[in-house]
Length: 162
Image (cartoon, rainbow, N blue to C red; front, side, top):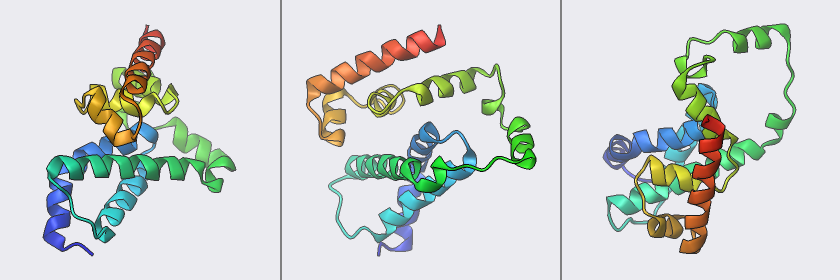
């Protein structure tokens, strides 16, 4: 178990990035919060050492991505019971990004419409500033494949936002 200051330092340095990864997968705040929390718990219980802060950041991004994918595959997500209260609550939201016509909502919808890959490589490239070789190392994929994913993802985003 990592000590408290190490965990707080990691959250301060990379918390925003981990949060954005979680929001990329889940439009709803509570699901993204659960994924974020699960990622931090995994970090707290990880006994391994990191070479530098970039290695720690890459590890957190990879774990957050895997946590989100696991949560999406969970059985309770496939069988949702909708009642009048749930529908009414979903229809009225104070979150600007979930309102129809919101520019950030449109971009988020376009990103969420992408399959993975190319969703994660496009996110890492456009929002986190990683190069294709760095993304290839993160995702354990060939560099040329990452270039193809990024190209395909950008093309799909352009079509979705046009």
